[in-house]
Figure 1: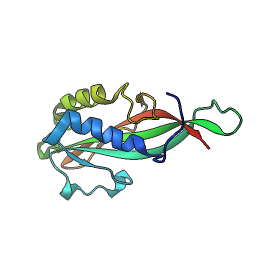
Figure 2: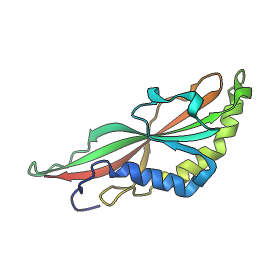
Figure 3: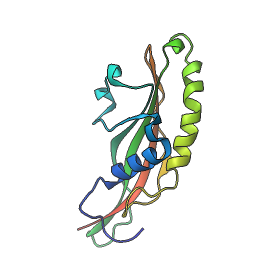
Length: 148
């Protein structure tokens, strides 16, 4: 990865969404909410993928102050609707498992933008459950170089 970040600081989002759409096509419903709290269950499909900007981390590597390496973080959340899993969450995990495998293969190591380094999986949040849905979050980072 070399060069400067172009005029779209959040170009990784479009790249991640494109990678997901190439892998999953119309099998899932897509969205990019501002936060997970904005999700409304009544508008979700059976299988959903959400891409959420999760902030930046300083990756070091500054030179004269005119450029800086940043690890941009993106949360990709897979949700599945399975009302039968209300009393047994293992049913939701069984339903989600094949999608998780595909999601990881689809994103890990891919460059989501012209000035973005390969996506690396990081630590994520714990899965979340509601009566009808299970949410499986995966955190990815991509290194960008910001030059002024």
